[in-house]
Length: 264
Ligand code: PGA
Image 1 (spheres, helix red, strand yellow):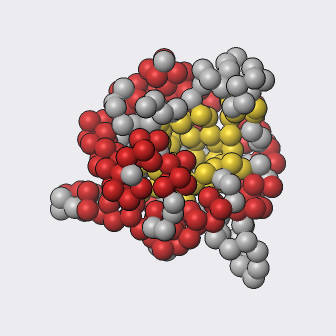
Image 2 (cartoon, rainbow, N blue to C red):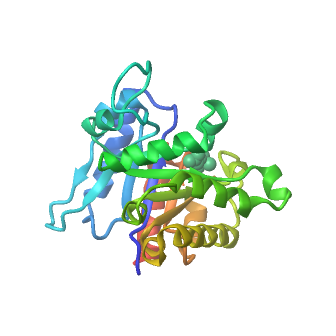
């Protein structure tokens, strides 16, 4: 089966509203040259305070798809209540998000996000009709100790526990080796593809072959215009979650452009 690629920009804690608007305007003017069928699923994840500066762009060719969709970088799993500083899935949907990134290594590391919390968030996101982008990845120590696969498989099993095969099929996973994030040192494309294949086999065990075939699994970690073609040429890499290179219109657009050329 052919899975539609996703190019997602994680802006992290960067850009004031005016900068976010300027970057969004450049990306939106680029995607307006194409139909949603031609484009990968382009997703941008700004900070919460800039969600009002960006919006999804619906395709007008009659295909029913989006040329651009908006993601949040985090959410809470409860629907409302006394959770100071948090935002619910419904609030993020109301602000225009259709995807929510969860389990990013920075949130696991700096905000003590656990596998159990990530699982609760994934369930809340799917119950709210949005799509979770579930991040997983190993540290350099785990890689050097040869425990990458065991660690990633355990993160995936925990994140997807109790979720139906149908919901798993529409979810997105991002494999992001922690040592490759923001370091300029991207994981070798064959190795990223091998780990992603392993993730797909774990999904198959949990949710069946059809869900494993449908779920989109991205690579993330120092993706740049110079790395994307090789990454996208691999059988199991369905796109990229991009930090640094998504903050400049030129490099993000270049990545989208190259993805279109490799995947058509
Ligand atoms: P990077 O970040 O592209 O800057 O390595 C990726 C990510 O953290 O999602």
